Image (cartoon, rainbow, N blue to C red; front, side):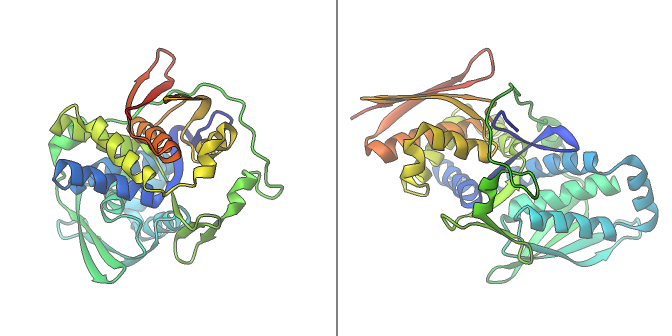
Length: 333
């Protein structure tokens, strides 16, 4: 979209992002290191709800009725094929039992899986939407980069079901223009990425980084749930984890120096529309329309400042009355 967002064509309220997989995974690991506890359970449940919303809108009611009569194998194969296009790895149906009993299950064989807890949520959400029953999930590593993910009939934690809610994002119009591909109409900038559809992997041909397409709502829900359980310091924990990741040099410093290149990079990823970045002697001001993953963006901005200047800093941020993200970074040394 011209406003720095990516949306599902059939469900414009369902926002997507195109992001480096290592960024997501390392930020979660950084949060776990800082708080000293695992967060996989929360990640899986948040992704379940987001995937439920995605699949529920994707499948018409008549299709769901037919699926309940003839089986879910075809839907599973279609959903796993979609996951491979989105960069989730080589995910294929291994086995399935569906006799409308408590012993029903489905097993997905996964190679180069983008995330065990996130994909577990994908499987749960898909079957909640298609089958209408509550399911649980387990994972088993059977090789160096190979897993069996099993979904089975069992209730999910009700307290998480009640608290996790779909995210609402602002959608102000914008004037971002990408050179279109003459064949598909998408941004030509995407030609810098290689879709290995046989492996379910998307690779940047410039940086070598692995990319995924996913919904920011599920990742924002993880952050919100962590805050509910562990306190209001969690957003700053996420900011700190992201800042450390960026400062370590994952992103190119050249991409961060130019306002226009940073604006294009954020828009291509669906992260929002950069309207202002003001480099000062001892700080940085930043304004972005249509933001998502706010603590991640704040950590990104702070990390860029520290990476470019090689100075420590402090950061503050707010969402103004128009829904824009305002970030202020100030050097501390």
